[in-house]
Image 1 (cartoon, rainbow, N blue to C red):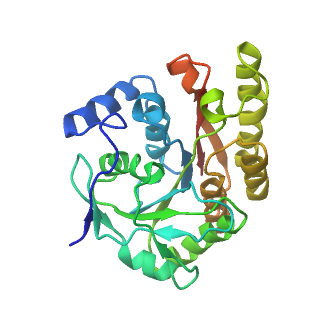
Image 2: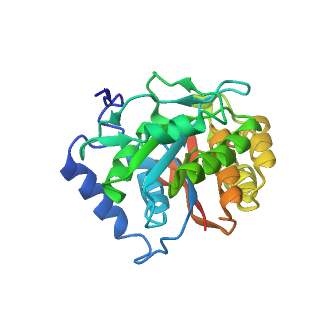
Length: 276
């Protein structure tokens, strides 16, 4: 059996079961007590858990309870790049291995030409321990998609492949929002309160509005032209999947920036969105 080992250092997320469960218990104290568990797709951030783990967990806790496969879709793929799928049989997490849904990958391959994803990537890995905690028996399909309009069709193809196999799937897209400041070479509004307000109220608000409008093309445009997301293709794929299966009631569950957690001139926006 081929098992993909952890690639991210412990600072990204805990290395033992107690650390995972302790983090989630802390987040649960600040979240809605009994969220609806009816979402078929969601968008979650992928920074280290210290910064955005709470929002990632809030997305997963709203996933439809009967999901048997979690499709985790990351990004960091340029426009025109091929979509990638991991070929391992399982993925290592602090809570034990997650089994790969190889059959769904093969079914998807009849609709989309997939290449092997053999490199380390935070956009998918960072979410896997939370998947294991929320759905201990579920299988996982690891995908990464390009930041272009084709990703909406990839999401719809996942829905068709899942239907072919009778799979009940939760589609989890992974993207952070605006990366602002000198660390990212992007400071169109300088520094200080004006910059933070612009990120929150204009750049991040604009792409979140596109998420909520299920407008995949606008998501790609804002992500690429306005630098409003690092992996807009993943969000576009979630919209394609959600539209294909009728999960067309979007909800913004939470939003903040890394500056709210750790003040700095360079900061990143994060959100949790689900489609019910």
